[in-house]
Amino acid sequence: MNLEITSLRNLVAALDDAQRLQDGVSCNAIQPYLQKLFTRLARVHDRAAGDFVAWVFQAGGSAPRGGSPLGALRARDAAWKVRVSLDPEMVCMALAEKSEARVLRRFRAAATRLHDSELCNQVQTHRREIEHLFMQLNSFGYVMRTR
Image 1 (cartoon, rainbow, N blue to C red):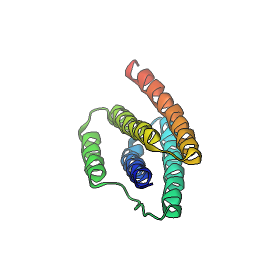
Image 2: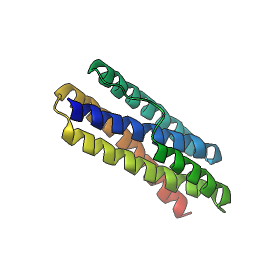
Image 3: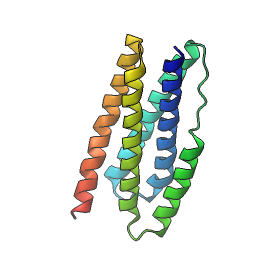
Image 4: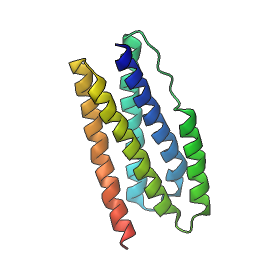
């Protein structure tokens, strides 16, 4: 049970970190599709983190929201990179791709440590949804890089 709670806390922190980073860089997105994609990612992250926090509370633990200290540093670093870039939108894409890759790694790590089948199904459902959006982000990034 403690391993599951710890895994979910780490997952919630990763989701909150990714959401914070995307909130910081999404204002630099000029393409309407990219803005919508960032908005959908933020919504999915928030919904998944909320589900996992609720499960942790039901299990008798606590899962603070807001992300990790490293996530705050990454968000500040991302804002700086976007500010000094010649193509801020491409930097936003690259940073969002890295951030989503980190989130998906956390999802995979959490899925291997969970024993509750209902929780595992919930994690896999959210992972598939985020993976789908990640593929869209990668595809759009590829199109932007080749233009």
